[in-house]
Every structure is written in C-alpha cells, then in structure tokens.
Image: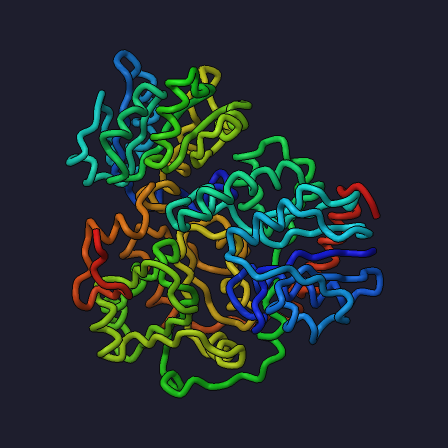
Length: 185
Length: 358
C-alpha cells in the first residue's frame, strides 16, 4: 500500500518516471538525497541548473526547486507537467506577485509547507496547490511523499493547455478519434 | 428541519452528470425522511422535474441564465428566509443565508487543480466564489477522503468543518429492470463509463485494446458516455477499432441497459486520472463486476480494496490487468450495498454535529 492513500492509491514507484530537477546554483546537494531515493526505485532522475524546452518534451515531469528556479516555467510553457517546490516561500512584492500570477497557468502543482498554502490564493495567485505533510527538519520534502506528488502531477498532464491550444499544436487527423475538426488558430 | 437544497443545475429530465445525479438522489432521500421538510431552488426547467417529487410550494424557481451567471446569482442573491439549512450541491453557497446553517458539498477540486479543462467564464468567474464558499460554509461535505485531502491543501483551516460522506450507487439503477444490449449479448466485454475528455483517459484503454484483443480475440470494449462537451481524446485508433467492431460506442444508455452492462461485463475499467469520487467504480462492484482503476486516490478509495489498481502511465500493466479481468471470474454482487438513505442520514448527522442550528 502507498504511504499516503489519500494522495495516491498505489505505490508511486510501480512504474518508472523520467524527471528533471532544476536547482539554483549551490543547492544541488539538497536534491541529491531525493534523487538517490527515486533512482533506487528505478526512476530516471536528472539534476540540472536549467531546462531546455526541447529536452523537457522527453520528460514526464520537471521539478523546480524554489521560486527562482521556478521562473523556468516561462521557458517550458506547459510542454511538460511542472511541479514547483516553494517550501514556505510566498510571492513577495508587486513584481513577484505579478510574475507568479502570470506563471500560474504553466504550473501543475505548487508544493508548499506550513501555513503558506493559505497565502497564495489569498494573494490572487490562481495556482494548483499541494501542501506537504511530511518534511525533514531542514524543510526538504519526504522522498516518498514527493514521489506521489510527482506521479500525480504527471498523470494530470500538461498544465495551461486549453482545448483550443492543444488543437492548434496537434491538428486532428482523420481517424484520430477527435470529435472536432481543425480549429481556426 | 426546514432544508433548502440548491438545485439550479438540475435539468428538466433530471438526468445528467455526477453532480446532477447526486442532487436528485439526495433530494429524493431527504424528502423520504420524516424529520426534513425539503425545499429546492431550481430553474423553471428543473422545477418541472422536481414537481414529480415535491409539492409545488416547496419549489422555489429562479430565472434561467447561462451557468456562470446563474451560479453568481445563486452566490450573491439572498436565499428565501425561514430555513434551518441551506445546502449548496454544486460548488457554491449563498453569501447571505439569513441565519440558516450553510452546507457545501465538495465533489472535487477540479476547477482549482485543472482549470484548463473549463471554459474561460468558469475559470475567471467561479474559482474565487468557490473558494470563498469553502471558507464561509458551516459544514463541508466531501464525497471522499481523497477530496477532503485536496480541499485541505487549499484551505488547511477547514479541517474542523469537514465530514466525509461517500456516495452510493444510483437508486434508479438498482430499481431498473436489466435491458440487454444486443451487440454485447454472449460476448466477453470490458466496460468504460465516462466522457471522452482528456481527464477521463479513455485513450489509454482504446490504444491498448488491440493488444487485449490479441489475447482475447472475441472481446469488445463497450464505451458508455454522455454527449461530448469539449475537445475529445479517444485515442489514435478509435475510428479503426469502431469500424472493426472491436470498440462499441454506446453513448448515453438507459438505466436498464447500464445495469445489464454492469451485470454482464467481464471487467469495468476506470482509467480516469483525477476524480472526486468514482461512481462507476461503486456501481460496478454493486453489481458484481471486477474493476480495474488508475492510481487516482478517489477511485482506489471507492473500490475499497476490491479492485485492481494500476498506474495510469503503465500501458503494459493496463493491458495485463484488462486481459486478466476478461479471463477471470465475476464477483458476487453486494448483498447490502450502501444506499442514498445512508448518504442523507450521514449528511444530516454532519449538519447536526458541525452546523450552527438544528
């Protein structure tokens, strides 16, 4: 059984998950512990300082550590599910708020800890929220809980992709099972 | 207890998706209780349906309007006075309830989790009123523990006001005589219930179906679902498989036909990636069908350990589980299934425990 059946109904490790962790300079060692655990369960985990949209298409999920790294959502733009580990951070200042409001549409899950959850929507940042229940004393997430969050985010699919945008990128072909024809893009 | 149920989303036919079914079944079960004087707020269309259930004086009509506008009116306009309880069955409770306890049923958090699935009007106009309703309601009735967990991700302070009241299989389904579906009679078939939106993940099953047929050549995939309401995702081989007779789209079916499908399916597949509850899972088990679900926590919770759960991203495992279901034995139908009277009773218990009045 999974550690948290309210988060996921089976073990998140039943199938491999290609994931990229994007970390700010000097923080990679914090992420390696998570990566080690996930690799031990057969996941293909990469840790890098940035993400290229073309490479991201090959992944199931991109994990952005901190609001600084999370700016990469502007480059990725929904080509892959993105999970932002915001910890106890809140959007700060008018500029930070504006950025987060703009990037919310490209976010599959924004993972927060403590009482930060209430502040994001209160500050009118319309982002899908997930609250960490278990974390290490240094605030880093529990590897199994994070695995469940990543698997769920990957299952939900690409964020911010409305019906029309998907249709524009992938026009319906004959026999594709699509009920609507090519849209006017 | 004078109880006002907000039911403006119920159409004249009284049938529809999960929330419509919830509202109609709950209204019926509450009306049967001696301790409840049930009233409903309904559109003129919906009033025609409720007239067969309630005295006309207990139906409070509202003008017809587009869904988003109607929802906002429901939120902003004061409710009729003199009620002990005002119950929002679809995402919203009124801002001013005139002293009544307010109850909000939380079916899911899809509008917050997957906003791109919804039209612009709903995304822009309803998300904040929805969250405001969660903050303001005296009692929050979640349909599953999984939904409660998602809700508390957004509103961690709501824990004391939340009660989990799972749904039950449809009363109408249980009462309907089974009607055979001729193309399926005598053939092994897997059954999928739901629309063709991306979230329902029908394409996972359809694209894996040729491999299932390689193992069980006579098998048919029967697809029951409402009319399309947006972009559809049926998989890349849908048209070919329908033409071959490997896939049978049934569209909307009667309760009797659906019951027959549940009673004769070799396996019921629930591949959706995100649900608030998972009524087809419960209904399949009620009628003795083996069930395969995705890893979605609400679906697994509805299955209660009686189904097989497979990761939605593992296509090979889905094929194996489907073949195993087609080749395996059916389950025994539930002897004493949960009923909508149970749902109504537990909802009232939540109101009495957590609400301000009654």
